[in-house]
Image (cartoon, rainbow, N blue to C red; front, side, top):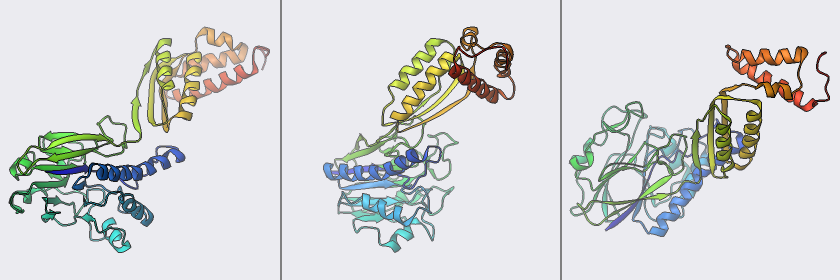
Amino acid sequence: MISLLHTADWQIGRVFSQFEPDDAAALFEARFKAVELLAGIAAERQVDAVLVAGDVFDLQTVSDKTIRRMFNAMQGFAGPWLLIPGNHDSALSESVWSRAQRLGAIAPNVVCCLEPKPRTVAGKFTLLPAPLTQRHTYGDLTDWFATAQGEEGLPRIGLAHGCVQGILSEDIDSANPIAAGRAAQARLDYLALGDWHGTRQIDERTWYAGTPETDRFRANDSGQALLVTIAEAGAVPAVEPIRTGQFAWQQLEPRLAVPSDIDELVEKLERVGSSDVLQLRAQGACDLGGHNRLGAALDAARARARALVWDGEALRLEPTEEDIQALHADGFVGEALQELRAQQGDADAELARDALLTLARILDAQGPARTGAGA
C-alpha cells in the first residue's frame, strides 16, 4: 500500500494588488503557511511522497528570498517531494527552477521533475511526470505515459498540469491539453493534476487537487489537498480531501430594494470574521438612512475581516422626502439636493451620488439649528 499527498497551484509569490497593502501582505504570507501546513500533514500522516502538480511559483521573476522561503517551508516533511513546473513557472532554459538550483535552495529530498522521464520513488511506485517547458503548449504532454515502462508490480502515478479536454470550460486554461481518459489509457493507478484551482474529480483515478490556499472569489471548492491511498497496483485509489486553507473568500452581490434588504445585508456583515476575504457588489437602491446603516456596518466589517472590497457603483441613492426634511434643507440647498437626486439617472450618476452624500453629511453635521433659506 502507498499513500500520497496531492497538492498543486501554490502560486508562491503572488501579489494581491486589488487589496490594501496590509491585506495583500497577509494573503502573500498565507501561501508560505499553506506549504508549512502541507509538510505537517505529510509528516503526521506518514505519506510516502508529496506530489505537487505545477504552478509552484506564480512568476518566473519571484525574488531569491521568495525562492528560499518556499523551499524552507517544506522542511517539516523529510520524505520525497515531487514537483513539476506548470504554466506559471514552466521549465524554460532560464527559469525560477534553474535559479533555485544555483541558489542551492533545493533540499536532497525534493525532486524537481524538469524532464518527462519515469522515476521509481523509494521503491514503492513509478512516477510519470509531464512538466511544462513553456507557458502554453497545444500538444498533450501526457501522451508518452502509455508507452512508459516502470518496475513490474509497482503502482503507476501520473503527474501533470493542464486542462482535461471536454471536461472544463473552454475559456479556462484551454491550452496545455490533457486527454480525457488518460489514466485508463496509460494504465495509471492515479493521475494527479494541477491547473484548476479547486478540488475536482475527473474520474475514479484522476483528480485536480486545487490550490491549498484560496486565491480568488470564484466558488470552486479550493483550499484543500488530497490524501490518496492505493492498496496495490490496479486498485482504485481512496481519495480524502483535507482542508488546508486559512482564509475563506466570499463574493456577495445583493440587490437592495426595500429596508429589509438592508437589514439582511447588515446581518451578514455582522457575521464577518478575521478569516474572511469578502468582495461585496451591491446594486439597486436605498435611502439615506439605509445607506448610513450600511456604511457603518461596512466600516465595522472592514475592521474584523482579513480583507473587504466594496463596490457600490451600481447602488442608487434615493433619499425619501422624510430624508430631505430631516436634513432641514430648503431654499437653494433643498433645490440642490433634489437636483442631485434626479441626476443619478444620468451618465454622471456616480458623481451625483457622491455629491449628494457629501452634501447630506454636511447638512447632518450642522444639525437642525442651521438656517435654511439663505446661502
